[in-house]
Image (tube, rainbow, N blue to C red; front, side, top):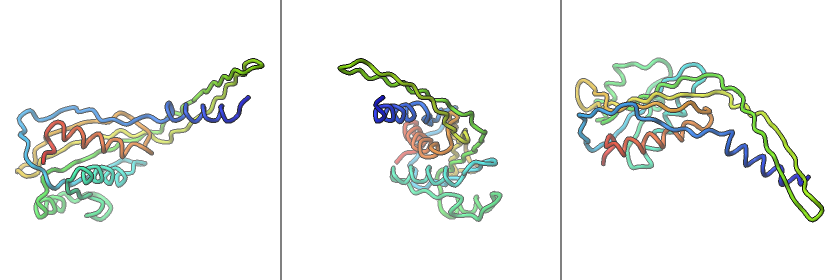
Length: 192
C-alpha cells in the first residue's frame, strides 16, 4: 500500500471531520435598540471548572481590535477571582465604555470521535485498498452564552444575546469571537 497516500488521506479526514467549527446563533436582539457609534468595549468572561475564560476574553478583544474598536478585558484590568460589580461599574464609568460583552462558558467532557479513512489506489498491475481507523479525543467541549449590554445608560440595557454550538475548547475561542463581532456589526450593535 502507498503509505504517503494513506497518511495524506488520514490527515485530510481528520481535518475535515475531527475538528468541529464553532459558530454563534443570535437568540435575541432588542428590537427597540437604535445603533450608536461604539468606541470602547469591555469584555468579561466567566467559566465553570475547566473553561479558560481568559482565552475567550482575549479572543473577543483581539477580534474587536482588528475591526477598529478599543477593547479591554476583565482579566487585564481586575485581579483574579470573583468579579467585583462595583469595581466593574466604576471602570466602565471612568473609561467611558459603550458596550459590555459578557460570556458565560459551560464545559463538559467530550466523547471521543472515531475517524475511519479508506484509501484506494489503482495502477498498472491492479488496485490496492486499505482502511485505517483512529480515535481522536477532543478533550473538553464548551458552550458559550454571550450577552451584550449598552452601558451608556442607567440601568444597563441588554441589547443582544446569543449562544454557541458545543465545540472543542481548543479552537473555539477565536472562531466564536470572530462570529460574534461579525454578527454584532451585521445587526447594528457595533457601529462606527
